Image (cartoon, rainbow, N blue to C red; front, side, top):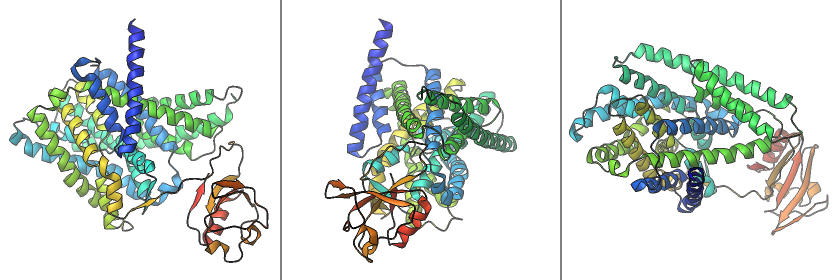
Length: 495
């Protein structure tokens, strides 16, 4: 009966979590917050017992590996290229500055709260919370069909996808120092950082290229579902081999995913659907497990409560803004409003909680206190920042409404042509209002027109109206984009 009961409770938890995720979209709150809430609710008074920190850390490691790989696959390199420099600086120097500023604040206020904490433990507590989690931000923006100006979306996606390795390196380094009782060696720390990032970056790119070669060369088309298993194995191998080789596995899987996602591979659509679903499953399981671990009564202890509130508000209003504005000084393309918004979207998510499990696994004194503070800071961040992501973008005039895509197609991967959706404007019809009057590249064909909730296949003499949506197929999408922009149309959407 034990196995049956486990499956019953697991199914119930997943079902409630999915309902909570749906409620999160409607309320404009991060789904992560409600997933954690479900775990805390079922763990209250040991309704569901789960107290294995080691197993929770393993779940977190697996989940982060796939989340970062999938995030890399979903990232269009052409979109992040204009913000590559600023994103890398935010993901490295920004994390270090956040950890140092927050660590100094924790060490300063600890005596006033009645907590004895060393410099190393103060920095360790800060390091676990130094990375951001913007995945929940974009789930809110997409649910509200909200876009961001000034290339902020690719910047935040790049930062959130690549800043976990830096926080992980800081956390592991400080855990080792706290466990051994040695003094903080900044020179050795810098050497470790360079080795981990270099090895992680090189192996991530190499394994990404090898993964593309394997996926395209191996012939298992008799059972296409096995391609998902193969890609999953490549992601896990990239992470584990890089970690064994003294590199940063999290950076490696993100870069490998970035390489795979920006090259042609067979069954891309099927692989993307699989990894999207699998990523959501792992996120739900991870958040539920972390919620089950926490003891609500310990969170409400005065020393935890006061420290969590103070650190949470300090990170939101002081350390994150300072590190953001300092890192973005060399990049003059961003307006002050954009910099304010980037500083506001520095959400803490599941990653800090997972990193906070490392001190517990290492048996460091005071590790439980660190875990509880990090958990409380995460909740505060999600409540204050997560629930105002959309409102802040509107208030700073950085948002715009993203139009729905009228045409939704699944195109076989071997077809080289690309389908796009174009909205007809008055300027587009200045030479005439029939299809033959529109100047499009010779290798482009208008396949279908959408008007007033109906579709029709156009002919050369078909009359077009402003507001019509055209489904266009082209062998040279770049030429099509240039031609369409010359007609006064700024936005063209890939189908």
